[in-house]
Image (cartoon, rainbow, N blue to C red; front, side):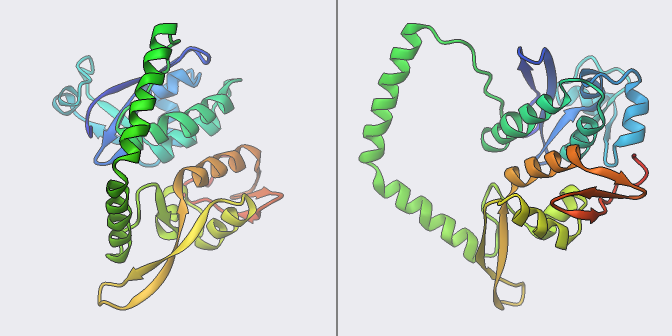
Length: 252
């Protein structure tokens, strides 16, 4: 469902966001996100805190479903969304971060859409239980499909590709701005799921690389930044010591 506009709503937080998968990555309507986070001047907030905004003209924004954006629009990448959330003075900013990190983003990556949970009626619950029973029977009768799936995953790894939902340290560095060493320290400090996998280099050399669960890593990163203290151009956290984050210099 790449490039399909989606609306995300949280009645608990009284917040509504527009986003999509753009070129395979989650993005949000930047101005709308800034307004939802309580920024009085969204344009200034984007200029101050965002480092990788995607600017679209009217035709491009209309093609993606943003029909009311006469002057075009800007999309906030995942890392820019984290920056806006972390710098927000909104009392519920941390709860917004939890909602985005733990619910919205994983659902976007897995299904291309956000599954908003409406209260279920008794009839819906009964129907859902019946469907679960059918699904369980189907799974028992199609164990071979799971074997094929696992085989494909092993083949995926053997070709040197990272399985969905995981990321290598080079990708995590680019996403959050920490150094390689600090990324590894974060994984250790917050006990984030990671594992070595076989890797075949471009010239065919067999090696291994460590991959990390991407979403728990980013959740831990945002939690750490909420708790970190600015120290000049660097930051301090009890679990991490002093560290720098590329793109966060001068944002104290």
